[in-house]
Image (cartoon, rainbow, N blue to C red):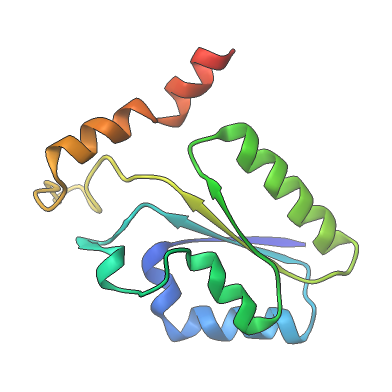
Length: 136
């Protein structure tokens, strides 16, 4: 089985649709993981798509799509475990959208001036390593 990771901006690319469609029609053992960090490069995702959940695109291919809190390590683990099991059992692909936040620039030269400071501060409070450390 295979796991394919991509950012939220990739869901608007033709290659994304072709790959998910092929995985669906051939019932391939694939888990497609969309890391939705709310910014496609420097453009907010809500300016790029009309969907509230990118995982809803899975319905167009007849495969399951699920959205999880990408900052909740245990929720991501459990969701991935189920999707991998499904793939290994010959039940085809799953699209998993992990909601998170990019607290740094899209590249080293990106100062993130397009992200509101308050939004970034809130995101730092939900940063996965810190949250998991508080649980353990």
